[in-house]
Image (cartoon, rainbow, N blue to C red; front, side, top):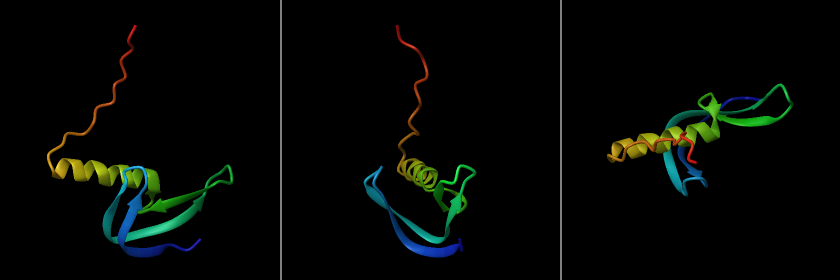
Length: 73
């Protein structure tokens, strides 16, 4: 598939908000299992939105959420 340059707002249903982009490149790539994945700037759209949300949180002074990997008994 052909890569397409975009600018504007992209909406994330995971975070319930839109993110601005000015010079992003979108494409659809097929993995080895035959499944298609929507890529923004070469990364999965899910990871792109999570990265943008982390950047937004850091900009307003909210620390990145820590992942709790400890076991509780």
